[in-house]
Length: 393
Image (cartoon, rainbow, N blue to C red; front, side):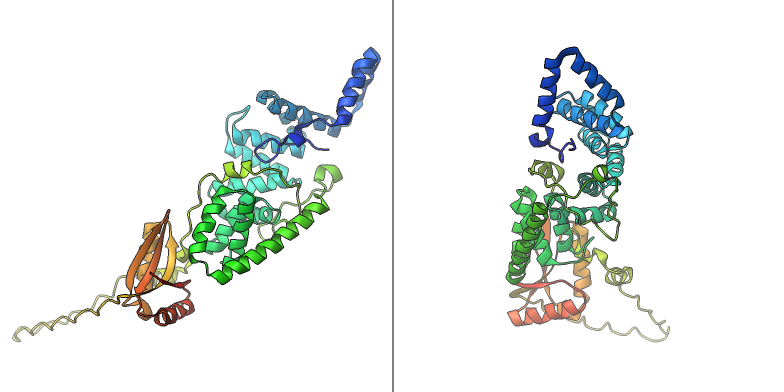
C-alpha cells in the first residue's frame, strides 16, 4: 500500500490510516514496555522499503494536518532513498509552494525522477508542467498518454491540439470527443471550448465525435475496472517512461476529483494559427512583395507617351455567402492568412469579413452570391491545402 498525494489535492481515502494500522497502534498501548521494545526492534531491523513507506505515510498525515514543513522533511528523506511516492509528493510540495519555496524547476526534476520508476501520476503531471512552461513538443507524448488514461486536463489540451492541427494531426472528430470527455469530467474550460467548436465544426463531424466519445468512455471504464497496473516499487520492475514516439497507455489509478484540473488549466489556451505550420517556401510566397518591373530608358528626343488610363478595379463581391478560412488568436496571423488567400484566383475578388468571438478572430472570404459558388471556392481551397467551411453571414 502506498501513501502518496493525489494530483494537486489530497484525497482523504489515500491519507487515511487503514484499520489494521490503527489496531496495531492500539495493541502497542496496551502491552506496555514489552510491546514498545518489540516495536523498536522491528523498526531497527525493518527493510529500507518499509521505513520509506512509513515516512511517506507519516508525511501524508502531517500534510493533511497542515504541518507542511514536517511533511516535506519526511518525504525528502524517503525521496533521497528513491521512493517514487515520496518523489511525487515532494514535487507537489515544490509546485504548490507548501513547506518549501515554489520551485518549478525542482518540481520538474522530481516529477521526472518519479516518472522514470513508472509512477504514472508523476508522468501525467510532468506533461502538464512542461506544457505550461511552453515546452509543448516535449509535453505532448506525456499529454497523449495521460489523455488515454482519462486525465481531463490532458484530454482538453490534446483535444485543442487535434482541433488546431498544431502539435497533433488535425482531427475535428477526435478533438470534439476529447473535449466532451473533459467536459463530462467537470473541467470548466472544456465547456467554453465546446461552445466555440459548435459554431464551426459541421454537425456530422460533431455527431461522429459524440459516438467516438462514447467508445472512449467505455474503454476507460473497462480499464478502470481491470485495476491499475503494479507500480515499480511493488514489483521491482520499473515501467519505462513514455518515449517521444510511443506514449504510455497503461492504466493508472484514477483520481476521484477534478479540482486539480481546474487549478492546472486555469487559463484558457489560445488557439494556434492553422497556417503556422506552412512550409517556409509557402509562407514566403504568401508574404513576398510584388516583383519590381524594370522601367525602360526613354529616348531624349521622343515626347513622353500619354499615361494609360487606370484599369478600373474589379467590383467587390457582395453576396451573403462566405468561406471561413481560419480562426486566430493573434492579429498578425489574420493578416498573413488573408494575403495567402487573396493570392488564389477563387478568392481574388472576395470580400474580407471577420467576426470576433471571445479571444478568437474568425476570418471569412465573403461576398459569394450563392451557396454553390462558395462551396466551389472552398473545394478549390481545400485542394490547395486550406481548411475551410461554407457559412451564410
